Image (cartoon, rainbow, N blue to C red):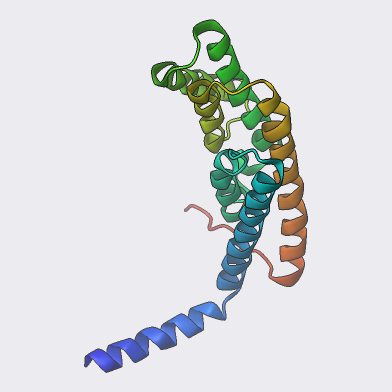
Length: 175
């Protein structure tokens, strides 16, 4: 097979894939993630708080890309971000701000999220940011709580819209 034939075969395969429900759903997940990150960038500029995006970009990828997973559910999304941030504030209160203590805060956040059954891995960065940057308690309410609630609401609405336009493929069952 020549290089040109290989490219044509690849293009045919790509076109066939893009017409499948899986590809349509993936496109909507990517579009939702891009839209949501754009909203966070705008919120960051409007509020002059430069950290709006950081805690939520990986959360957005998780709730858009794997919406049925336990860590993507609203309880884990909101609870995980709050728990991780509170773990960070506890460490900040007890030990102050430093990169080493930020690492301790991340470990404490993981333990707390697991114990409280609100495990949301992207939220661990909240503990790190709080301690490493010495963020004031207002960050918990103005960014973490508000952002997590907005993301949970957005993901709910987006899933409902997506399910109407492009049905989500069923997960594969294990043998």
